[in-house]
Length: 165
Image (cartoon, rainbow, N blue to C red; front, side, top):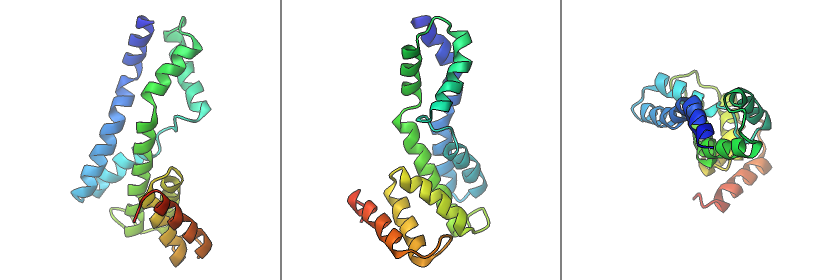
């Protein structure tokens, strides 16, 4: 087991260790108004494979299996969960929110309400209250999405239930 673990760590530590750094670097760049860096770092974070998607796990196992032929499916799943757990999903959703803000406000990109709606929607569905409010506002105003007060209310309500004021 230890040999399996060390091999997996060496194989995947670079890719997974960079992920939080990309998010943090992207937020820092956003705050310092370096929007090109923010866009590249946050886009990388926002579009990383969803760890809950079975195909991503299958692809990962395909790459890891030759290096760890004696590893059981359970050992690989355990390692996958530890490396691609909830923190990664949370950062991914927050990166999507930041990208929505950038497209909504035209920060480093051409203002595009449809793109903003796409990013806000992904973050909102992942449970980010600020994205839920922003998506609700787009539905209220009809920016990038058809005006729909019922959908707007629904998103505002979800945000309020999550404690967003």
